[in-house]
Amino acid sequence: MNAFQPQMINQRYEMNIKLLYAIYGTNSGYKDVSEVIQKVIDSGGTVVVNNSNMGCDPKSGETKCLFVVYVRLDQGPFAVECVNTTESHTLAIS
Image 1 (cartoon, rainbow, N blue to C red):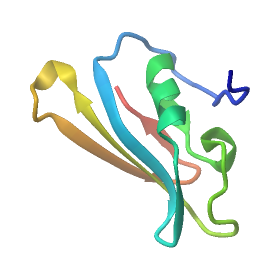
Image 2 (cartoon, rainbow, N blue to C red):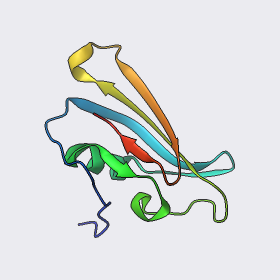
Image 3 (spheres, rainbow, N blue to C red):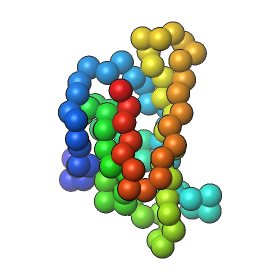
Image 4 (cartoon, rainbow, N blue to C red):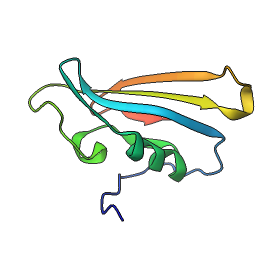
């Protein structure tokens, strides 16, 4: 079991979302954080984006971005959404 648990806010449940992928970093270096973001979605869909909550620092000293692609299953097969946010901002998928 993974000991990392992102700090969640605004706990909500029963979202009908399928995560396709999530990456965190810069153009010159990033990490796949799909497992972390899936836990966020499963736990309520809101998290502050930072190295601690993402479980990594893929490019030390540089401002990172989080890029998430997911499908809203209750809105048809082509309801793909992309979210892009920078460090210290709150990601909300609802």
